[in-house]
Length: 150
Image 1 (cartoon, one colour):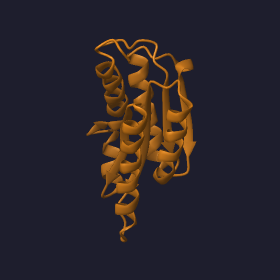
Image 2 (image 1 turned 45 degrees about the vertical axis):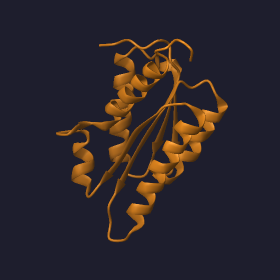
Image 3 (image 1 turned 120 degrees about the vertical axis):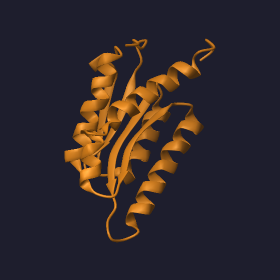
């Protein structure tokens, strides 16, 4: 277990598909706890759905003070192309934030064909992608600061 410096981490979680996203949040917080990120150095913001995640993540990035942001959501394919628009634009929005503001964004937005796949990735047989997103975000912060200048 690697212990993180006293990072401050923002977490943005979608309420839509909350039976999945609450499990992703549990996974992310478990990773942060294991890595030594104190509870008082974590800010959780709930939004309606994945579509709203980027705007709140951007607000956190522009406010400053966050070493990393973790985005958690679950977009499940339906019968219309809605899935493609939401999943793609959410991913693009989050990538734009981390490249524009230099704040790593852990991508924990599931894009699944059905609820069973989502639950498997939220603490089931396929692990917990919330944990993985937190781990990736902390790793990106450490890598970006490895030269000691950041």
